Image (cartoon, rainbow, N blue to C red):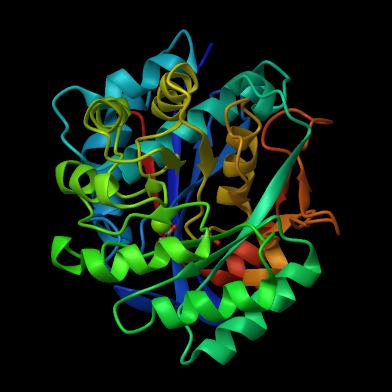
Length: 375
Ligand code: OSB
Ligand code: MG
């Protein structure tokens, strides 16, 4: 019986080992919202909300998500009985618009709880087939091309299977050219603009076609599907949509309009696992490869991403860097690692997400806690 009687929200602060810059902003420290969901029998599952401190990636922030979970989302789940985790998404959709990252944190926590009640690994419950996932790195914007080349070379030497560089106007063609030159023609290279361009920039974006990028991620507006179709018709490089894909309906629009050829699925962005699976299945039917993106998660959010990326149509390497890339020390045991072939192992030996939360460490990092109970 899938049911929770208590939901605890916690905010932890974790400084990144290096600041991470995208076209719309820079982060030095992550403010992370963690959830604990308690089954009436005492079993507890942990989940993570991926909303950032600032609304520069999506309209949600950690503070809006906290409020949404407390005011509207948790009351839909606390004290209610569900037959399966697949029911949660619809229960949260009805008459609550948006707030997908907040919904996803609760929904994904319920999937993990269900997995542990069934004593199955989360990846298996989701329908995962892989035992290991090819991993890519996402490199933030650097001050000059030389600095970016140094990071890209180091990533290649560590075995990463895909190298993504963040770009923005003024830090694009020259930077990508330098990295392609340094890594050689075989390297799997891509760029992510996080909405930094408009259709006035087509001439700049066309110059990127010279570098054989495996894809160009979200060049235009965060909520656009239509202008990306106009752009895709003028580019050789496949467009990958990230921000614009908030659900399977947007994936359908993308295919219908030709707005892109690849999708980056982040379960937090789309409202959780049921929605991620729907997008995954739709894309598989339409020959659209997908891959799992990241949001600089702690080891908890990473566990959820790794489990999802085990699904068969996650063909391209995911942004699933190991714990040590982000943190002095992660909050889970074991920490996430990547081998020299650039592979992350899917934990299949125990029920649930496959890592244990280090409660002492979480307590040390916690700056606020709020407990919600079934009414
Ligand atoms: O656009 O994919 C993105 C991080 C924060 C916000 C947006 C994005 C990213 C990343 C980081 O690319 C991926 C990771 O977790 O390593
Ligand atoms: Mg992106």
